Structures are given as structure tokens and as C-alpha cells.
Length: 311
Image (cartoon, rainbow, N blue to C red; front, side, top):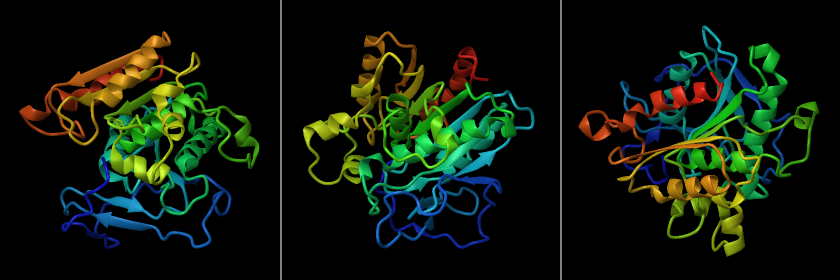
């Protein structure tokens, strides 16, 4: 989901009025994360939904962490899930806690990532979300035996701006964006598969989602900076297989972001599965005729992931 929906219906979430978060979590960094501002942000949970349909968003993340959804019948594979929010918030319910149980019911061990937001004073802002995603992948692999996961079967799935985190991780998993802190950082951060869904991809106009670009890169980024943070320009022969889904009537993040990424992957001779839906808007989750068949993307992803031996 993109930025810009802290409207009149948004309100501070009151503890005890929403379903409990998963109890199990993993902190990414020992102590304060690298590049911290002099005055740390304060974490806030904002509720935009209602008691029946929560729409919680989080900002001010100073303790990056993963929430863990354990499957009853593990399939030996794991997924790092990165919710969107235009890099100004993280849409933790719609693109994290709703998809996490669905995936875990099908055997995946799911790690939903609370990543730092780049516009909240962190040094090297454009690489802060990537640093958290790299660190998360390495920690998952370092604890693979504990979770019954094959370290070679850890994939990434992301939505909207979180899809940019996913694509950035898949194309720049070995970029040196933080100093190693422990033995886990000797492990690879490369996801076995990557699934950016209705994803922000380009940081260059006219394709760029303006809010995400502004939050990630700051004002007036150079052409070189925009290209450096656009995953389609960072594809290599080592980029993992991709699954992408996007609606052509998405007026928030242009479908051409996905089209451009597909072209780059195909040009490199890589494995890419792409689903472009005529209707579905931003989110692919609308009920009723306007959401069909777009809202079936999860089933399509599950079948594809299993075909990649990840599930």
C-alpha cells in the first residue's frame, strides 16, 4: 500500500482493542541499529480500520524485528514478508498479518519484517530498509535448524513499497550496506525466490511512486541515485527467480513498474512468472467481480513456489 492514507479516519490504536500480535519475534540488531539519529523516533501504531477489519499501520520503528508465524506442518521452506506503506508507514495487518497465517497454513515458516523507515533520520537513508532485509535473511538462515527450515529454501515476498524492499534485496543482496555485527553476517542474504507484488520498482519518473521515492531518496535525487535504487537496473545473472503480480488498473503504483522489471529479468535470461490482471486496483484483494481473478494471486504464487522446490 502506498503512502497518503493517514486521513480523517486514522486514529491512534488503543492497546487491547485489536487481536494479539504473534508472540514470537526476533530482534534484528543487538542494541540500537546502525546509523541511528541523535533523537530516536517513537514507534506508533495507527488504526484505520474498525473492530471487524483492522488496518493497523506502524511508523517510528526503532527496534527492527521479525514476527514469526510457525506452521503446524512445516514444509522446510521460509518466507521473509515485507509489508508496504510508501516508506512512510508499514501496513502491518493487510500486507503482513493477513498473509502470514495463509502462508503458514500451507507449510511455510513466515517472518514478517518490521523494517526501519528511511525518512526518520537514519544515516544512509536509501539503504536502511535493505540493510534490515539483508540482516533478516541472514538471521533466518543462522536459525534455520531451530525453525526446521532448509537454509537454501528461504524466499522473499513483498507488497508495494515492501515489494521494492523485496526487489532491492533480490538484486542487491550482497551490497555492503552495513558493517557485520556477528557470525550471522557471514551468511548469504540472497533469497531463493523473490515475489514483489504490485510493487514499487522504478525510482525514476514517470514510473516512480512519488511518495515512496521521496521517502527513500530524499528531495531532488540525482539520476544516478534513482537508477541505483531501481531494481530493474540491478539485475544480474545471479538474481533469483521472480514471481510478480500487478493490476493494470492500479492508479497508485503503475503496472509499468512490473513490466519494466520483467523485461530486465527476461533480458538476463532469468526465470520470471508474471501475472497482469485487467482489474484489481492497488492491493489485488477486492472482493466481488472487480477483484476476480486478481485476488487469486496467492494461490498462483503457492503453486509457482512449489514448482521452484520452495514448498
